[in-house]
Length: 113
View 1 (cartoon, rainbow, N blue to C red):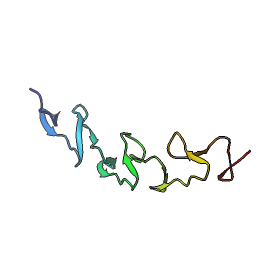
View 2 (cartoon, rainbow, N blue to C red):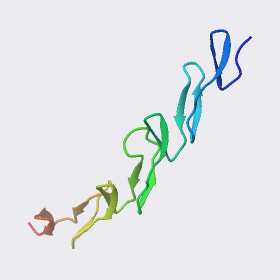
View 3 (cartoon, rainbow, N blue to C red):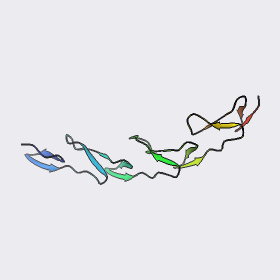
View 4 (tube, rainbow, N blue to C red):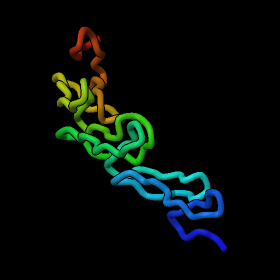
């Protein structure tokens, strides 16, 4: 005989695997579970991830679980708009800026060399 999915064999009996709310079973061997998208494992529970304005959920299983949209940068749990100076543009990463050629960054602005 063998135990049904969601149960594990212990002492010739099938014991239910304890899975917290907002989680799902990954492996019956060892009772491994994972939090559903939008939730993070904290002390054996799945807690909702607070996604700030101008951010989106990520698929990462570590870190804060969200990232800022292009044109915004993370700052103490929020996403704040980039302050892009004159003669500059948002950089490749989308979370910083760089000067337009031939301008150079100096003291937070773009100046001619």
